[in-house]
Image 1 (cartoon, rainbow, N blue to C red):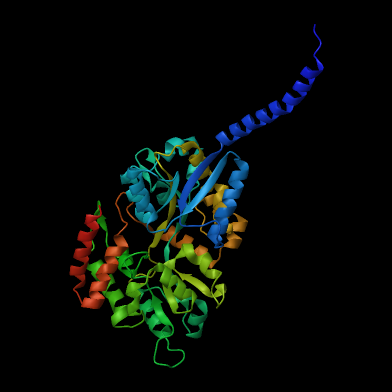
Image 2 (cartoon, one colour):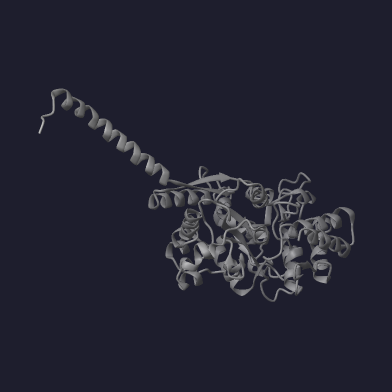
Length: 440
């Protein structure tokens, strides 16, 4: 065998590091190629510091640590425009892999074809106990179409009546006594106050988001849910009947006759009412329970003074229906990253994700097993028990197979006509029925 020359040995000595470097580059390229980025649209920004945003940031960190080949990229969106933007993007292309869908747009998701079948991708592989663990069954079933399931609940919310414990105590009002709409109105009258005697109201008795967009449930809808069966005939609305007329007159009177709600509330959305409640402008106000944790961290009068009422009824014999709202999560049916997207959805809606939503994000857990968790119970308060007890007693969820995106919009527009134009409530609600039908 010929011996290597000195030049040959020198050449091999030179080539070995190059080969090693080349191999490292190849391996690095293979690792990079295996990396999957799941893009998600949500109204939260994990770079911000609200409780829900902190919870989401922690979830992403925990998930990525457990799944090093998957990265979650968040693209924050306006919450009202995000679902319709997603439906449009399904036709034009450019959608994210994952999107959040609110209750009003679940029906639109089913009709759009934009959602991937999560039963095939994920849920069919779960044990039955996991499927049965969802606390609000109507929420788990909301995005079902036959054997297909197009979204899973992230966290459930409800439109609720917030109240200031300190102001009610000063006025000698027991919140437990506010069982009827008349009792709520009378309390709001007593609570409306000019605190500095300058001739202008400083604290209004009852705040309602009456703007056409970014709104919440109002007594008009609650009256129909309580008294009218059915509220919908398939997807045809039945607004212009006595329950709707009664509720609409009640709301209009709160503004015009009782003067416990400012007329400017016709332009206020839920963001405005929330900010004004935080600032001390209302003693009672309609808002979303999803915003409780955010409010609690901002009020100057102390989070211990924020309470939540069960919804009133007309006769006050029992508490009224508690709406079931909230946010669901879906994957785009055309996503090139469906497997990774399903893995992320599995985590964020599962026990670990739900616990973070509750303990860090201040949300009501969607899983029964999480409700019993000591840390979840500690993180919650009396507001948690009020909502859960109310859901247990009488819950109501929008007809998901219909497009209910404009439901509260058309009812608020009817309220505007009665307040500003003294329109006949029945006629205003008949027009609302037509507008609702146009969206189907």
